[in-house]
Length: 78
Image (cartoon, rainbow, N blue to C red; front, top):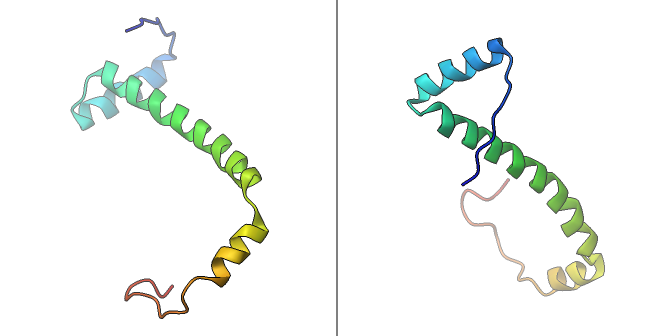
């Protein structure tokens, strides 16, 4: 596990402390979770365009043509 010292504006630190207390987690756990959420969001933002670029619209149309023509399952109408 690595250590990293952060310099955080007092106002942001106070708010982070308040949220951590409300969530009943340590400040360390709060910061680690916040960093993990941000990294995940950024990685997801990159993933979808990359995945879309690998797609083949003609292959999808072919697959769709062979899909059964059936009514949606209850709850999936929309």
